[in-house]
Image (cartoon, rainbow, N blue to C red):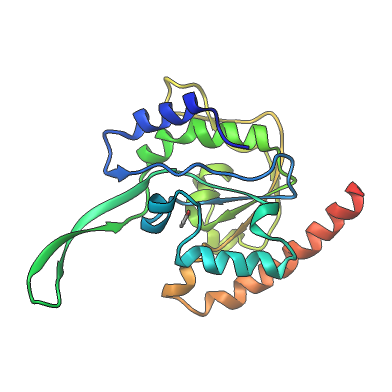
Length: 218
Ligand code: URA
């Protein structure tokens, strides 16, 4: 599934006034067991157009392998489809100072700018489980008071947040309920290696949940 071109164009327009560059489509099958919702693409992704193809993506593929899945089996997307950046000074090896773009967390306005895209994807993809990666995906879908450190490794069965309408900056809730399974973002282990143990425990729980769903499906 890929979002219609008109919706991609709308997303590009809605984010154009923010410091966010490029556009990466989400992708994967409809009606999958699992949909992954990350934060926003990084530098690698906006260059090759493949979500989670950089350093965090490598970790994410190891997560999937642990539950017996591959990239092709899951739908992969994120709260924002462009790369939010900030300019910072960096010293070159020559000693010269240059300006360089660094990744940053998307802000609330950028998340709202791309909300119609994620809303469409969730409805159309219709996954059995939505695994949110990190705080951004969790708060976007399950509610702003949610915290990854409290919720990771639990199954939330509830409606997900969706934009009330295109003119509004307010969220409502979907009529349908979804199973949301929050875990940490794969990039979190680059800053805090000890999170890997918690992620592995979460993934083992996810594996059990997937087995139950597979059994019901077959
Ligand atoms: N982080 C995300 O959330 N998405 C990507 O595609 C890459 C890193």
